Image (cartoon, rainbow, N blue to C red; front, side):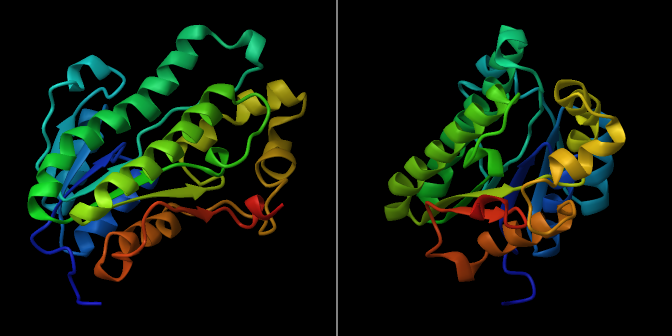
Length: 250
């Protein structure tokens, strides 16, 4: 690999101000890309963009109507933005279900749609969708998240088939529980729906299905994302790459 294989390329990372998104933004910048950090958090997006010498895009991706006519001149798109709701189906607010689908399925579709013309014109593009092990298997109390991520997996495969003749790859990266604010914020909800103490959630819920008994680090996900956007991954498309400690092997 050359020292900076993405030199001259422009990358967009959604949910880029923290967690997996921030790790991906740093990884892509280290590989030479000019990175735009997209996030609903203006201070976080600007702080990281300034650190990387990139740009900040303050955007609420749940407002999908505002994305209908968007055009993006980017070579690498990392769809990462997401939220979580933990609730039995009969108790889940309909608007929460809709929110997760807008943010984690509709918005990625609209961003891919906005980026493909530029990628096709250049004959090169990399689309990486941060899915989840829950894009491959289900868990109780996560109907909105699981169904949105399953949809993202299907979208990614379709884009791979359409984009292949144009030099555009599309893949999913599907981690288990990652040490991020998103995971930390759901511990209380997990304790409530499972009827256990918060101190038991990590061992009894988050790591129950994993062969490797620890949380995934954001940098481990980002390292894979970096490789998938590089020249060695030109034939890697239409697949879902798990970083789940063996969870999906069951």
